[in-house]
Every structure is written in C-alpha cells, then in structure tokens.
Length: 112
Image (cartoon, rainbow, N blue to C red):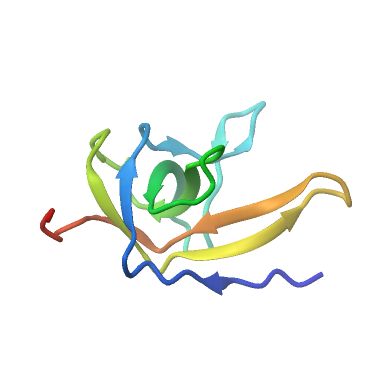
C-alpha cells in the first residue's frame, strides 16, 4: 500500500507545545535516531491543537526534521510548516493517523 500524504489546512487553527521535542528513535537497542531522506535527524513534538472536537485526544504528535536538537519552549505557540496527515499500519495490525511537517516555527500571529 502506498502512503498518501494529505495536506492539513491550518488556517484558523492554533498549536501550543504540550511537551519537549524528542528524537525519533530508529533502533531502540543502539539509540540510533531516525533520519529523513536528506540525512537530517527526525524529532517528535506533541502539539495541543485548537479548535479540536476530539476532547479525548486533543494532542497530536508531529514528526519533523532538524539539523540541531530543537529548542522549542514548552507552552509556546508554534506553526507547523507544511503539515500533512497520513495513515500508518504495522504488519496488518495496529493502525492510525500520523502527522509530519517540514519545520516548526514560532507563531507570529498576535493573540486576539
């Protein structure tokens, strides 16, 4: 099955950092960090999305590349650049939706 990336329209949404970024581990035994096609390390960042109708799961985990360990402040408002959603499945068993973006930037929008 080919994985399809679905662009997410983030207009009208806000994203708050819910916890610190962590490296995405490729091999738990060695601690090797997973890399993207360009050789950059991949990180995961939990983001609280508003508005969000799913009160049971208000946080999404976003994967993004970075050349350095990301210094993103807990509770800060950010903007995931090029956010896409995709379906994943492991060996015909567990399945779900994942999110990735090209970068995470500070949100320069002023609070109303």
